[in-house]
Length: 423
Length: 110
Image (cartoon, rainbow over all chains, first blue to last red; front, side, top):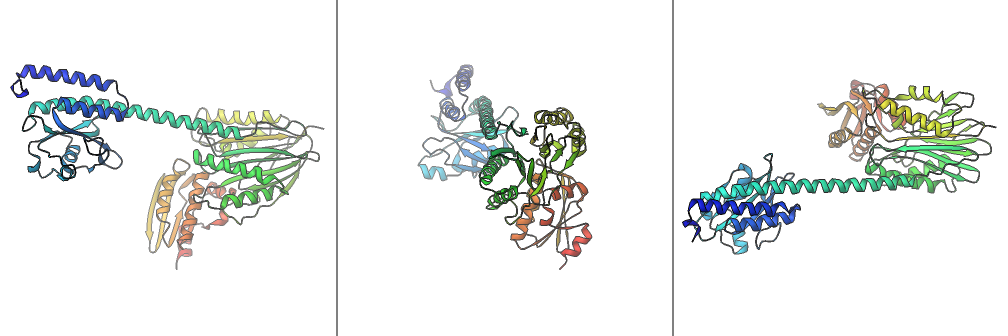
């Protein structure tokens, strides 16, 4: 018995059965590509068409892209919204039944010419998400054994398209979750690599040191370092402009440059000069690094230091005095290849300490958007005169954290403290 | 952040208003770099209440692009806190800085 001769009730039952089958087939497939293949095969079968095509809607480019299309190669067709039968359906979001393709001015016979296929009639419907967004268009060509698609076919395709739309929507959501998990995973890996670059071995003899670095978003652009070298200790704190992955890559370069530059360097100014020249070359994105570099002589307590645009550190005297190491107006690194850096000197007496930090401390914000600021930091530092470096770092980090009161940090935060042993 | 744009005679004026931090700097970057080929460009900073290092980078890039294109760039209206950030990074000397829009227009006039 041919479908046209079937009783309406029997036809409805048969359609319902097909739809249930489609629904089951689509339910088990959560990956988009194989899902679209299942939808195509089921559509051709259930709708009794000779050929079918799914066009997926590209939200960004506002075009339709053919997914799979019989003998035509995958992704061979790009259609603009409003162009052709499928483009028209994508624009109006309404089903279109064309009984004579060649009589319809919207029909583009180019694909027939290229493939040798002869399109007689077309039934085309939008694939919509549950909230009504356009996901794509499904197009069926040539009703088997009949001159055109019937109104029953229209109803059946609308039901089919609604089941398929839900499945495609779900597959996209699953893909988005998988992608965000993947990004999260690589960010965690980058975090581990970056944290692994930072030294955790702090000197204890001659001088005690401690440092903490807390990136604002997984990875960041802050760094600190310290290197012991023949009775002397190099130490540095720096901050790459911006944050996130770009800053983290620049931070890794900067840290490597610092370590290489301290070898055979006379003093901190020479280290900054070498780092600056290397960072200034081919710096298209105008990334820059502020850095404070110092060299402490363990026997004498003499500190030679140079500052490339970084927040000036503090000296915490054993007597309770607090001194700010004012800037010598040397620019941050990476901007001016010919920039010059100058050394300054100071002496740490037994029991004297220093505290270096990045602007994640002073620019930490409370929920009312006020900044932690220099004044609060200095008031706190005045109370830390004889504390150990670990206690100093802990106090500053703790004070900033309670000031922020749970507000997410806007910037990476680094604190490095040191103290010469008391005589 | 809001960015005002205005042309006065042959001088193009960009005036960002609000905070320039890592969340807003890319928007500012897109706007100011689009005008990097102006022969005479003035950035009025008087509406900026806060600028972070990500914001400083935008002005470094702008200065570089303007120089490459053979144009002239003046910054004006720096408040105390903005000036402090430029000074601290050692960048103030890299820019032509004026106090007011009027002063800048005089400086940029042919």
